[in-house]
Length: 578
Image 1: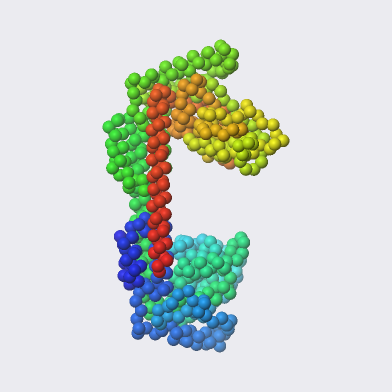
Image 2 (image 1 turned 90 degrees about the vertical axis):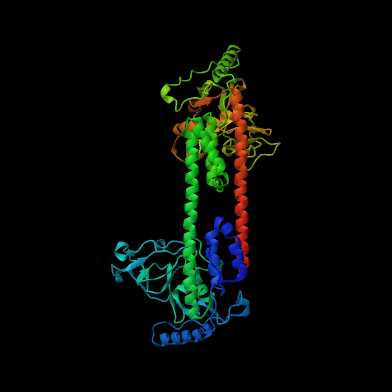
């Protein structure tokens, strides 16, 4: 679908048509198209001028005569004189027949009376800001006063008045009343004088240039709003009345096309996510190699289309990790020593260390029951309690530290943010005050497996391996660390398992606390976690494959960012030419 701008300026039209698909794909592409439509319209570039139209200068004379009549009849107050528009006030040159005007010249701003709640008929339409959809200005709900009875003062309005939300969050909530009613006093009824089309005034107030003007002048801290004097003094382009009608008709037509584009884009995105989710489910749920291969082939054939948004890339990351701990990411090798032999080596190492007095005899961990196993094992893999393979576990301490990371010559205490999923950030630490004595027994060592113990719910149970260790860095008491007997299980594979799949589900169940903002998981519960152990060579193959595929996901996200940036630059380039 393309949009027809042929009535506009040729260079802009050609640029839009040439790059329409790119502009449409930009994150805010349709929003920018809407802004472009209004900008073109208010510069006289959306529809052709007709030399037979009565010029706006003549309309202004009629408006002035109408105002004098209404003042004489006592229907409006004599308006304050407005300063003349100078050459410095004019942002661009207008077509023949147009005039620059101040809003107070062509409207009665807040031009209806206010009444108290006890004067309002129960069946009267009462409009609140929340009833209007931002950006589109659609009426979301029509309430009768009987539903919202209130003694607060309301502004009256009549059919044809332009209703303008003057608070900053609602600047783009502007509607033309299609019946009489009342509204909150934060909605300003603007009455158009003769020669001004109400719908044209609505689009004048929604155009980007006016929104920028208003944002530069807002006052108030809690609920910033547009002041009456600034509103009345604002400058607007005014075309002849027949051209106003043509512009409104054209804008309505093009905005309807924008609605269709937004719907089309949403449907496209929804379909892409749905198709990708189905392919990923097939990968995760199938036990048949042929079905899994078909899912991978589908993803490969449609790779470019599927991974043009970050949501699908994030799901791909999750699927890769899940496949890894299910034994579906790399092929099994029958020549690998099975994991049961690995566990025997760990048990032998444990007994040796106990016999040599290097460790105490560990507490027995409860055996694994058949109903605890969530899915079948690949050949040569084994289920194990994490506590059965851990040689050492502790947590750090909680000194009152100074803000800011420590230098290499200072002692630092890790923050929980140092532990990210599969990533260690040693610079995320706080400086230990000089008056406190460091505790070297809590110093972080290379290949320590770290897991967050306390904090907000979404930060508890995250695991990584400590790498690139800087000197003088200690654990906080909100981080658990542990080591595996004899390095017989890859620390990277262990961290991968704890962040993914069934281990992650168990951690969610084991978390406790009074509120989501402060939860924890104990060392004993971490030891109870059930984990799948593949042969050691396969662990290394899995970790290597994960590194490759995560690098691919990084590249995909960078490509999406680059494409988004280029699309945004294109749209901005188009806007600057208008």
